[in-house]
Amino acid sequence: MRKPTAVAAGALALTLLATSCGGAGEVEESAGADLNVSVGVTDDTVTIGTHQPLTGPASAGYLAISQGASAMFDYINDQGGVHGRRIEYLVKDDVYDPTKTVEVTQELVEGEEIFAMLGGLGTPTHSKVVDYLSEKGVPDLFPSSGALMWNDPEQYPLTYGYQVDYTKEAKILAKYVAENFPDAKVAYYYQNDDVGSDSIAGLDQYLADRVVADAGYESTAPEAVGGQISSFKEAGADLVVCACIPAFAALGILNAVGQGYQAQWVITSIGSDTPTLRALLKEYAEDDGLPVDQLLDGIITSGYLPQVNMVDDPWTRFFTEVHDKYGEGELTNTRIYGMVQAVMFAKALKAAGENPTRQSLLDAVESMEWNGPGLVPFASTAEDRGGHAGVLVQQYRAGDGEGVMEQLQEPMVTDRDGGEIVPADFDRLGPDEYDFHD
Image (cartoon, rainbow, N blue to C red):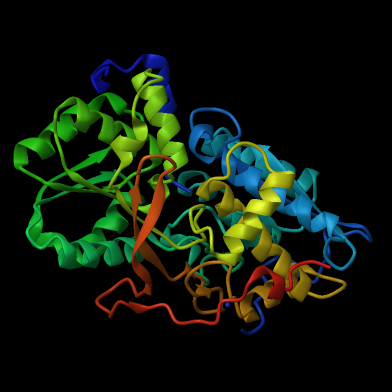
């Protein structure tokens, strides 16, 4: 096997991914913006938009999100849409460049006259347009990022989070590690921005006294990964917690193998989609015969949405059926991520009434009792827009054939601080009971 330090420059270019994407009361109108309008709504259609990395280095990890959402909207429209209207989902390519994000968002708002923004991807990108969306009175639903700023109703009154935030996720993982690997020497490996700092805030609540090494990577410096992994090996860390996007999780694993460094990998949900990791491992090593499933065997990760390998879950079965008819490529957890966003938006749109306004959409979001599809409760109230409230813990097992995820711990929820971690307790509905299309 070729050592990871010999990865071709062309493959390494794909690693230049940035920050991941890794429900009462009436909403106060944004200053200067009239929310009692139906911009983007006709007798036959509702037009919404999003900015996504369709091309460029970030597309390798996140193109699948908009593909999943598009497939789900195609399904919804074939069922009659919502209140007789088709949902037109416009996806603009921002190449994961904040300057381009501003440009395409203005095109969506002023040129296409969208009703709402759905799932704008990334902290450094979406943060550049969140004020603009508020000023223009455009509902900003479910950004694809776990940053805390999406849960700030006072500053961003029209924005509602989606992902579990990085601190809660890391806190739950850290407690699991502390209880199940009591003698482990721990290394932190993290993206050197809010992904890392917020994750460490959760990890330190249970693992601070076990950390023997840590390293923050820059998404523009993949050549530094080898030295960072070497520092973990030299420090004697036998467990690496990786708050990483897929590119750097894959590079970390490859470099560890190349250095003969065996450690237990614990990877947060933003970087652990196994089909994505398989493809990246093959790409970076430039070795079609690379036993990638064996390299991934045993990784521990977290999740808060239905997983591809949860074959008995009713939502997984439903997403599989929709993808088989409307989707493209392999069904992955990243595609399911986008499918869930689409389902939740459609549910809110239906609750907004037969003649929806931006105000009635936001009122519906804030008063919604979200009973899925996620595995944990979801918050989108006037006071709490934190999105998904926790995660489950799982482990990938390669086996002899198709790999599977084994659930190690049931879905748990918590706060960002020192509160207790408890089982998720809510009445989760199946797709047949979920009122999200005609």
